[in-house]
Length: 107
Length: 122
Image 1 (tube, rainbow over the protein chains, first blue to last red):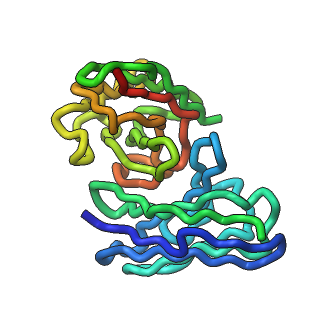
Image 2 (tube, each protein chain N blue to C red):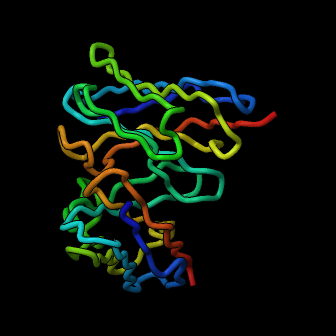
C-alpha cells in the first residue's frame, strides 16, 4: 500500500499569512494527488486534483504542486474561512490512501 | 447541481448487518466510478470501497474485504454498501463520493454526500 505522510500535523497562522502543507508518498505516484478541506461537522471538499488542478469554485489562493513523491498545498493570503483540517490523498492506485491530516488553527 | 444523499445508517449490534444507500442526482451517474469513504469519530478519512462506472469492477480496503459489498443500480442512480459482520471499529460516518473525472476508478472524490452515521455497539 502507498503511505501518504503529511506534515505538519498542525499549524497556527494569522489571517493574511501564507501556509504550506506537504505530503510525501511512499512511492512514485506521478501527479495523482488530491487535496481536501474539511470543517467540523461537514463533508470533505476537494480543493486540488491531479496535484495542481484547481477544482471548480475553489478560490485561486489555493494552489498545489509536486510530482513523483513530494507534493505541497499552498494557501496564499489566509482568510478566516480557511481555518480547517486539510488532507492529501493518493489517487494513483488501490487501495486509495489519505494523509493523516493537518489542522490549521488561528494564531 | 450534483447531489448525493446517503441513507441507512443507524445503531447495530456487533456481528450485525446494515445496508447503506446513496441516491445520486444532477449528473450522468452511469459514467462515474463511485466510492464510500468513512471517518471514525475524531479521526481522519479512510477509503472503504469503489465500484466502477458499469459495476463490473469493485475494490475494497483490506479491513472490509469479505464483509462489505459495494454495488450500484445505474437505472435508479443509486449506490449501495452492504455491511456484514460489523465490528465496533466500523463505527464511523460513511460518505458516498463521486470521482472528479469520468470512468477512472481511482479519480479523487470531487463530490461528497453529507454522510450517514453507523454506530456498532451492544
